[in-house]
Amino acid sequence: MQLPQINGKLNHNDFFIYGACDAAYFDEFGKVLVNSIRKNSNNAIHLHLFNPRDDQLEFCYSKDVSVTYEYVGSSLFVNSAKRWSTQPTDPLEKLKYDRILNAMSKSDDATILDRMQRTYFACARFIRLAEIIQKTNSVFSIDVDAIVRKSILPLENNCDVYLHHITGKKARFLAGGVYLTGNEQSYNFITDYAKILTDSITKDYIYWGLDQDVLDIIVPEYKFNNLPFSFIDWEMGLDSHIWTAKGTRKNLEVFINEKKKYSF
Image 1 (tube, rainbow, N blue to C red):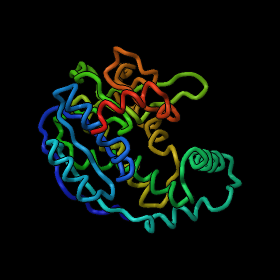
Image 2: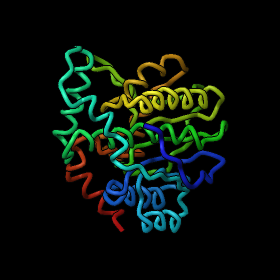
Image 3: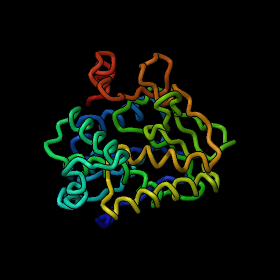
Image 4: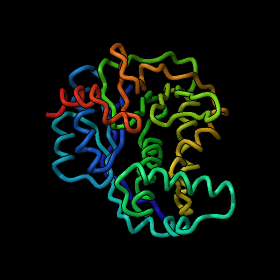
């Protein structure tokens, strides 16, 4: 598939918080995220929206949120869905196939086509960030199903990128919090990341977890530090800067109650 054109522009020259989501996730989490940032911090915000409604764009404009957006129909993912219509015989491909089915079982996906579109949303957020960012921008890309509880102060510019690294058997870098420090290598990191994702998408090779797999490939090529856990806290610590609703933690009472504070 070919990526759709994007509309809108980035309005920030300095540090900003970045997120991306489709219309349904915007209704459920996007407004809450924007309201929490506006209430609890002085940080600038840029959102990239997939298939937004006019009222959602108007909400962003009314909150002084910088916006880019695109319209991407499910028909674009027919070829990538066909790739996974039968169980692969190759062991590595089978693992990716199982990932797709596992993700579907935990969501309201009706078909693999739905999961392909959602995977595109997860990956294209970084492609679009690379397209709009300036070389000197520092930016913190976070999942939209999060609540900002304190201002995000700039992290030390002694590395190219901060990410949360999980160690052990299932070691991986999490795509849910990517902090670019604004140096030249930081810019190279996001552009390299975007190029690999774009290449995979244009070849209709899309599978759940692609965005995190690519991180495992390119992060070691750059100077990285571990993102403070308080910036991606799924344990909902009272002193943390950001609460992230990782997986089923969206249903925790503590997160739901916090979310209600910003549902206006």
